[in-house]
Image 1 (cartoon, helix red, strand yellow):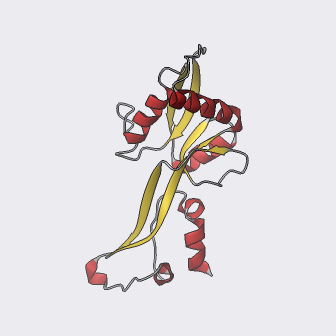
Image 2 (image 1 turned 135 degrees about the vertical axis):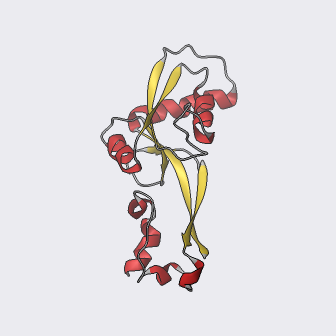
Length: 164
């Protein structure tokens, strides 16, 4: 059985140190203004392997290719740091990363956010022979549920319904 409970929207979150520079770069690219000579600077980006969006082997995937294209010709070089989801958030919060991808908007109060980049749908799945009748998130309340790392943070609003 598969039941769609919500849509998780992913944004890129930028540290205040790099946020304003990033948005200026995007505006320059979009407006196709005169080229700006910039000294090459590395931008540390926290990513978790999540095919087909992020594939560690070959530093590729839909999101990584998009990020590479955004930074091409800007003088900034994206450096991808592959980490577990929870560590990405901790490193970003500590200033060890300039950008964290696939975070909920509002998770960090003092950071800049991009427009929505990826939208995920979350599902409850069980074996057919269990005969669960799952119509809403509340129906999961008495069941043992396995989720992805940091689901409590990322899906806080939805999971709050389970305990209230």
